[in-house]
Image (cartoon, rainbow, N blue to C red; front, side, top):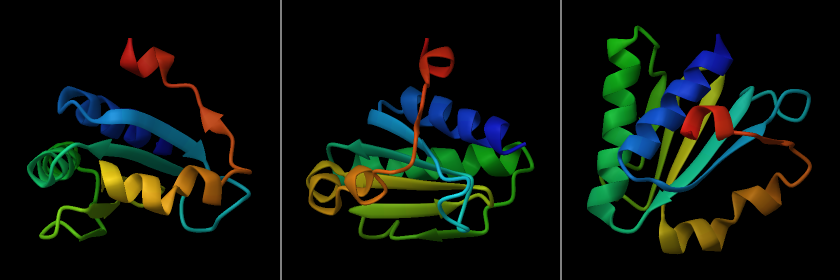
Length: 116
């Protein structure tokens, strides 16, 4: 189930032109989620559009949105879809927080089959 949720979120983010989409396999590393999906947009409006569309698509697919934070600021929006947590950053903030390095021990999930 979490694989499907992760893939759905990645597809929606890609459709909204999110940049540098990365999925980290957090199983066995964090109790927060099975997957972290990290991406960024180049403007506040784009960050909000990506996050808003992921939320809408999740609700449409009956995937519960447990929490959404940071939408108003549009710098770092966090969406909690249960086993999948999405981090939609503004480009500058993504570089600053560098979650990929922070969670460097987490394997990167190949998204070729989702983004092709």
